[in-house]
Length: 192
Image (cartoon, rainbow, N blue to C red; front, side):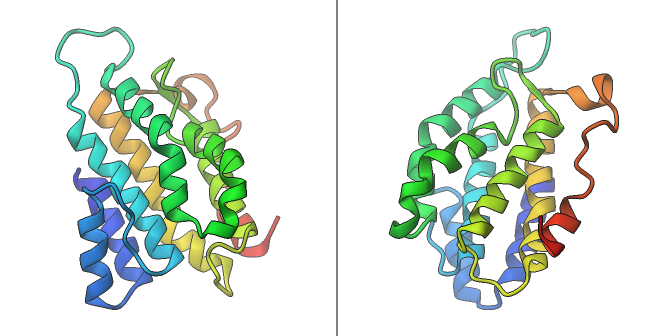
């Protein structure tokens, strides 16, 4: 958990200044409720919670050909709890958008059937954050604040899954550079 935890703590520290917020975010990582005050804090708390699942779901020790099947268990938990996570994250007036948002988040960390991860999954997370932004979930004046605090956090969450469960990174072997979505910061800062 070192990479993602460090990234989450940095993002959380950058987006909040009160120690009470820090305590509630740390406590929420292992609980089922997302306890935070600002939308950015809530998003970080959700990512902490997803990160805690990597520690809770141990990699399987039996030999496997393409990646650890624990990744499927992690993905199953995400899919199973995605509705509840969105209900905790979003204010009630945005709950009507949960079915659409859920589809993006469910695909944002990899293919749980193929046990792989690629830039298409990165794009799903990016689209999910953009959708939240377009719904005015963040209530920020600058989209660069959203991007700078959250983009690397998600990428590191995916990388930890790859490292822990030996998930194949399809971009490296199949499509280097073709659809790496390197313009994400510009889209978030300057608009689509």
